[in-house]
Length: 236
Image (tube, rainbow, N blue to C red; front, side, top):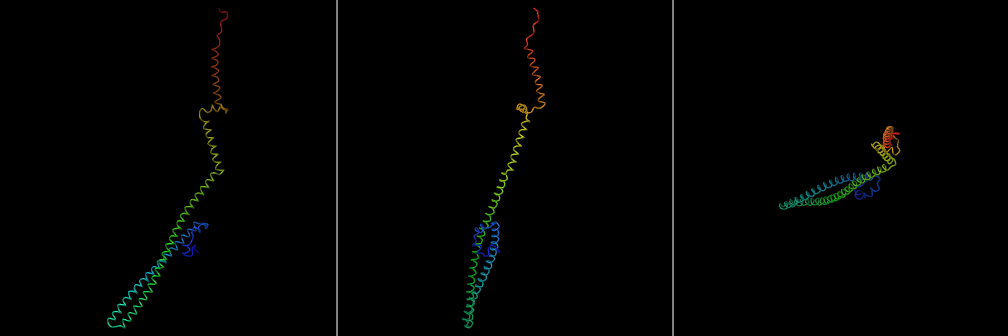
């Protein structure tokens, strides 16, 4: 069973209210549009049949009126020829054709009225269908925006989670360690590190010993130069 049971149900339906109550509005409006399109096809086919019937009735009416005119001419001819009996029969046929033409005129008017009503119904249904398609476009756009917003919210929650923050902290700590190692590997940093109480390498210890020996030799030389020279005993 369809969503709508009659054409009037479609025209009088409050699409907005139906969509507000629906669990799946997008699916419902898709079904609505499908049924509207099917109903529109049926309505146009029915209107086409009625238009054909109106055209047939109109043609028969015109034929009856034409034959009535012909019988009128025949009746006049019979009178001219002194055949009133034939004129009387011709006039009877004329009356019959005129009555038939009047009946066909009423039938034609009825069909034409049906055609006008059918066209008005088609216009209403097409307007309703256009409105439904526009609602579907809006619904699809809203659905896409809502889905994108939902994905963005989920991603934001994932980024803000404790695990993610912990990974960022670990990454930051790793960078700090790399920076420290780079500082230690830079020339001129080792002496500074030694002065700050960090362990001294074996090569640095020997370098200090050699430096100490040089200083001692230089210091001894200075002492020798500043020491007074001894005088000769009993020389003078």
